Each structure stands twice: as C-alpha cells, then as structure tokens.
Image 1: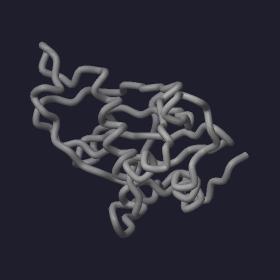
Image 2: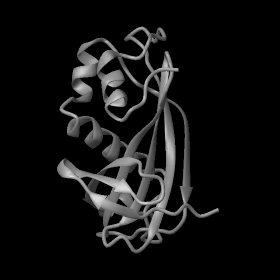
Image 3: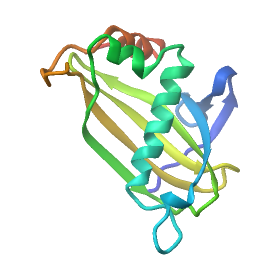
Length: 160
C-alpha cells in the first residue's frame, strides 16, 4: 500500500510535523547527480540508501551532534536490516527532499524511518527504514552510545 505523507507545519532548523501522525521529521534537500542514475536516466535503486544517509546525517547534525563525535566514542552503527519501498522514480537533476526521524531504540540497536519526495511535494518517490546496531572497532556489540540515546530522547523515544 502506498504511504501517505503530508506536512502539517514547518518548524525551525529544517524540522517539520507530519499531518497524519504528528511525528516530527528532519527535512533535507539535494539534487540528483548524473552519477546516481542508470542507463534509463532514473535514479539507480541502491542510491536510495545513500539518500537515507543524507537524511540521517542531517538529522544528527540538526540535533547539534555528528557521526564523527559518535566514532570518537569508539562506537559505530552498521546497518543490520533495511527496507526501501519505491513508489515512483526520480531523474537526473531533480531536487529531492528526504525526511528522516528516529523510529525506535533498544539496548543495542535502533532504527530510523525515511520518506523521499520531489521538492515540490507532489510526488512520493520512496520510503523505508534502516535498523542499526552499535559496535566497537572490533565488531563487538555494545549498548547504544549516549549521543544516539540523547537524539532519540529528543524525539521522545527511550530504550525499551
């Protein structure tokens, strides 16, 4: 089933509120590069994961933190599960908006949700989620780091 996504209002610093759910999302914009397209001239499907990362990194920065700060704590966040649902397509040079929000957090893993639309908000391109675990540089699973915990807490989410 096609996901509905409409903005109720815009907040400061790139944040918006979704009309249907009242959830707060971070919004970022970017232009599709020629290198992101396939022979047919549309965005190659794997690039939507890169676009999800644009949203996730922007959300972290908009909360006054950085992924580099998390790495300096000796923590890393590999993706352990993901879903991308394509609803339409994007072409070279399109301006897209990616929306990201924390979805859930547990002792050693957490997830984000994403929506990608064209910039004028008329077309839903893709939506999905990523699930991450928290590890050290030896790939040992660790509790979620305090930076990530605080970002999720800012969205009203705490570890289950």
